[in-house]
Length: 290
Ligand code: GLU
Image (spheres, helix red, strand yellow):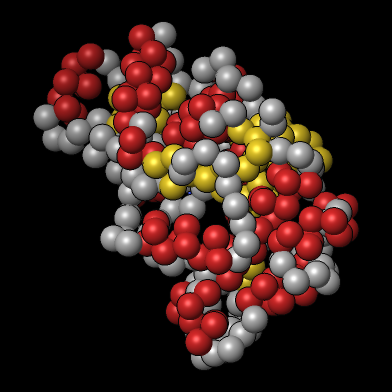
């Protein structure tokens, strides 16, 4: 049976924009007869208690999910064996660059700014040995395409550049682009609904899936939620979490329903009304109460 998902990072409480994306992921999945699963991306920047509060907030909105929640911290062996396999296949290289060195290096032709410039791709054994003395290596994929294309329900065919993406960071933590691909496949996810800040990452993730022999999901990248300055909504913008808004008597479900043009009282009602073709395509601008 097909599956949709939501995958929060427990670095703090969810704000109303994250909650709206979660509602959309649930609606897309349930409206198409999918199972819906939850994953907590807890490999990095974890705030104690945040995962529990995020899940409680999602449940309070009326979202439900199948299967026990998957925590990435329980999957380290799976990530390590995927990296080992790509290393054994000769598809990787060790990289010693800092973020700053990458940003300051001239970009390779046909690659956007910030793309990996290839600095460590072809180091000699001697150069590699020398660099290993100074810094732990990250493992990067030796990408053999410059671009990849995915299908997105809202954006159509989306092509974006693929560079030598990081599989395992220098500090040993498996990289997001790897874990997302492995976990979506592991959970049987065939529909990924998330904020459109990740649209440009979808092609590289689908490319990595193809190298691992995994199917690429269908994507729906939904409009982000912005503050009145046109910037991505953040905690500093005022009352933005469920608890903060409830304290100010804001009906969060009504707020989200209005932003989606849905009249019913909550997710269960919205299911009958939900039509992806009528989803507002512009970012949702929120003025949080302070
Ligand atoms: N935990 C990631 C985030 O919150 C998930 C991204 C994704 O849905 O692939 O940004």
